[in-house]
Image (cartoon, rainbow, N blue to C red; front, side):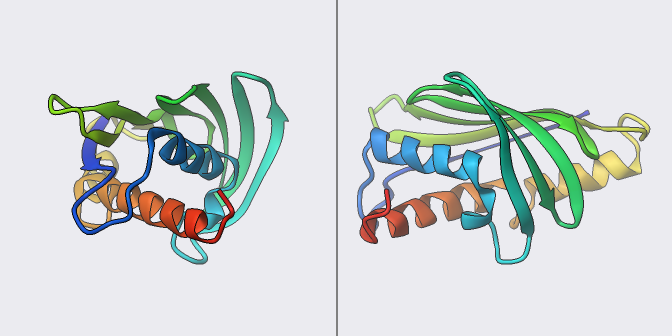
Length: 157
């Protein structure tokens, strides 16, 4: 199994501050349309196909791979992406929380397996290294916050 985690401050020194409400709005927008938040070309399709007060279902093409995700919301706190179809199975979570000093943090964590692959095998080990690497999920958290600040500055948030 693949387990990865990363945490970044929402409001590091030198950045325009975001409130919890603004950071949450960015996470919801990312869930609805990942194309705005990922590097250009990585996500070529992202369509919400079902929606309720507590979750949505989206179909997307990421890195040329089609997938379907059930995305559950705990308003103001947590977005959980359940991998319904695609190469991975399991959950990816983005969570807003305050640390011991009261500073707002954004945490990513996942617990995933690769469908049809040996648990702990070379494919999972490669995915683990990718998630934990410099271009992994910590970078995704930082780019999500950056894009949220841009949308706020544009008046689109």
